[in-house]
Image (cartoon, rainbow, N blue to C red):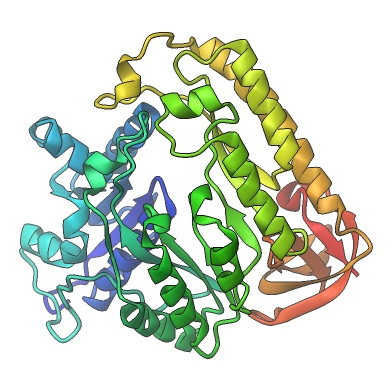
Length: 436
């Protein structure tokens, strides 16, 4: 920043891992242009809320955060970015937000890479032109103090699940080149990142190109682990997994989106697989890897879901034995086919089903972690914490199971070894495995 005192900014992220990546990239571009980053509750000159619109609840949270930012500093520049903005543009609602002084600037997903340009023009300040680069592709260079970085390699979706607004706001399928990803991962590795998570809106649409992306990341010195974001079960074939097995840095941690364990509901959701096809994908992974972590998303209370259909979904979840499951109560979303379907359930009905499924998946997670007790484990050290006066290093195994081990110093990004002795119930690390 070449004029007067440097401007400050704060950023808050809602929604998916793609948003997390894009927030990190926007923050880096602002810092490189002379802005100083503050905590979100500090009095900043600029507040950026990277919004989500996947459900009506996400819309409400986006509005709440925008209004909260205005309260922190009434004179600040309030910037709404992301999917909520794209949906507002699509439905001619953006002028209401600006007219009511909720926001001062709206930045769509496709324009996030130009965030510095838009903010500096709005503030009438100059940037250091040697630092500012209005790229067509967002890039990350460093994440101070972080061992793990999200790498966005794909955007857009063409699946049109009946409950989902994302294809309408994220647009057509598009992806990055392996060479582009290799360059970004190399920069991050040079600045201390040891693990990358390859993510996108619909990674499975990349198919063979996804393998090339993994290969590009694996070839980078300093990268010790690679994880994949959410995948569609139909991507997981014996042929595809046989190729995944060639990547030594790829973690056996697979997030396969389920959404329902009932075939009739899957059809109503416009999902493109059956429960048996899903189960087959899990069997392929379990055959290829020892005790792989399979995680998922499940929606309860979809329009028309009967008590029997919910029970079949519960039974299917237990059959698969997920390590973790994100359980969501169905939320009506204007502009999607499911919003106008008959048989909308009450919030009370959805709440009861959600509580029951969460109880089941918590038990399954406990059983998954108990498998490791008495076994030798390794985790990538990320931070030093204190519990009852004792210091511990903590991090995650290749299966993304949190571990802790007593240590007087941090060995960040090094592999820590030990025997799993017990599951810890201390509040801050509840569910972590203690290594000795």
